[in-house]
Image 1 (cartoon, rainbow, N blue to C red):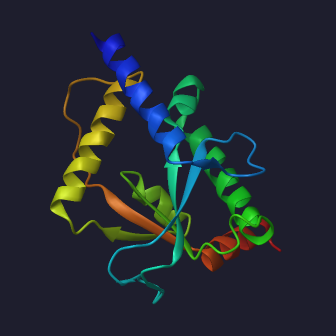
Image 2: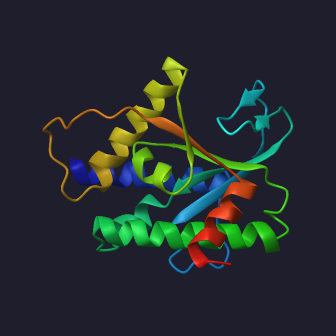
Length: 180
């Protein structure tokens, strides 16, 4: 039953990636993060650093390639290292690649927000109860399907949060890491 569920979720995951035109980050060595550029259509949103996201701004959502991560035999430390390298590649792309130059900010939703906060991302609570419910449901499904060590025991419940980083913050993050 679990294998059938795995196949169904993998198919859904692949279709989402294909039909949403997600891109791997250029020049990234492992290519485990997708970027989904889009035009912001929501209400005006103020970020903690004072940046205002307005309707019509060009943004990009960051997603993990669940299947690729699952097929790699990685420790959490390896994942953190790869993630940092991917962010450096994204910062490089922001300065050099025409597809990324006009992106005002990058965002997404995650349970791993403590890691992202250490990497310079702004963390925001998800205000929409309905949005939060569906995102957390999808995360639980992905965890059930892709985690090798999944157990039915309930873990300490962590709330899903939004993460944001502006174009400039991403470049500054890379400069501080590489001492440029």
